[in-house]
Length: 308
Image (cartoon, rainbow, N blue to C red; front, side, top):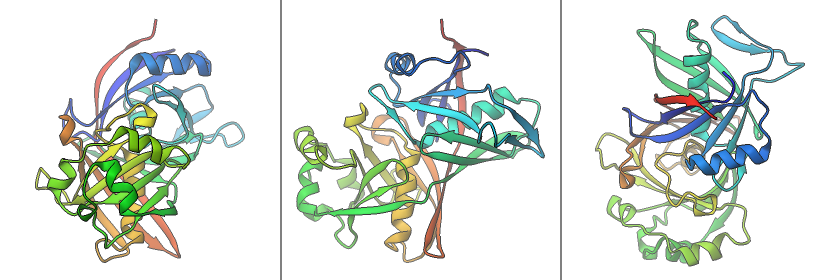
């Protein structure tokens, strides 16, 4: 099992869609430098390193770990350029590998993933014994600075009138900080092209380095929202599916009453501009002044091998 590598499609409704992820079983204690080098070589939006050498056991169809030794499966996430503390599709991709390949004879229904940003529970939903969807409980979103349309519109290369000014342009973070921008129409969303120079100036002295733009409606005509996500700072000009940023979006939608409610259960499409159509399931609600967020989707195995 040492240094075995799996390629999976996450947030995919079928194989060869969604967001591809490389998951490496890191039982040989690769150094940070080695993991970063592998991430550059694989060149996916994120490469995940999963350590299986910890005292865990299967109990009542969930994986329990000795709290004195560990709080779940240790996972580290690297982009081609740097390590990040939290990202959504690496969590679901890692949980899928654990359930499907590390414990193939047990129908697990919950797994704990331990990231640098904290512990993430993942539930597993099956139909006829086949994994249909994985759902993660994300950290509570935090809301920070507000941006004006006049600042953001030039970065997106659109007119300010195409930003839905009924709602704020806001920084939201669940361990990964993102600027969320509501757009008026699907056509405007589709035609956004990032101005790299203005993007670089925008992110130079602020915490969020990524931008999520969204609007009601969808190209597929089956989903509630369409999303595009830009994160050139992390080596990702545009991402076909992002669980972390969509989790922040779910919190934003509840916080701003975007649908006129303090709870949502919706689907989001992403990646159509890239030829990698993705579907994400977002559930969120506000309770006792806290917003609970869950993000889910399907995962498909594509390839497996071993690092030399």
